[in-house]
Length: 220
Image (cartoon, rainbow, N blue to C red; front, side, top):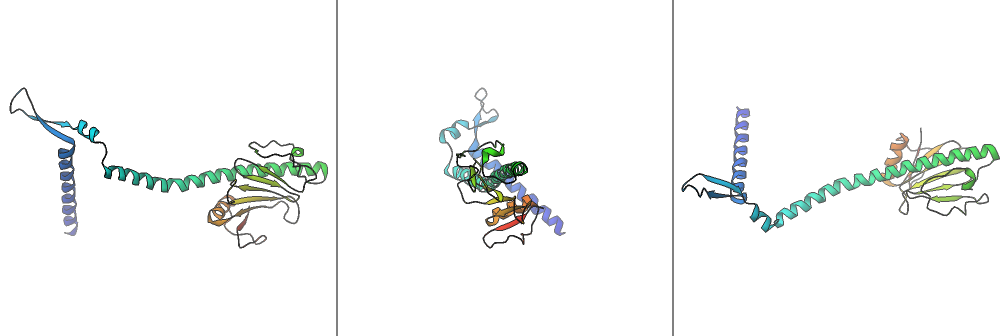
């Protein structure tokens, strides 16, 4: 019995909706004209395009469009920013691994690591900084990219993203010390930590390197 009543109510709502739409179309979008060839002939419906185009959009229509655009922007913009940040993080990881491999090769040939970028024999794309200060006597060297920056030190290679803004996350590739061979992702804030968790595949913070200001996750 309840099911039948529900069906009747649904049908009534549908009929009312159709009636409202038909009234709207007849009042706002169509005009009636009589066949001139035959008096009292059948009436025809013609779309009132001239009136609509001459009057333009109403304020309510414009507000609805603006509202829809605002909702779409609020949903899409954060997702776009996350996608851009993750793409930069991938670039940082590729650059970091390239520098680490070059440092290890340099160590095999020379018995030490170096901050001299030109001595590593690699050509990373997108470097925007002056590398003339990256000499063998320097303790560290910073390479600026369009996506972030990498620092070559005596014991590690670290790559940071994004550039010229508050750092969200960075990776440290350890070359020397008891951390040798380990790779850590350091995330700042919720977004940075989520990137590290996703990229490392490790949801648990490291117990070797801890801090209250950021989350450290070791690559498994």
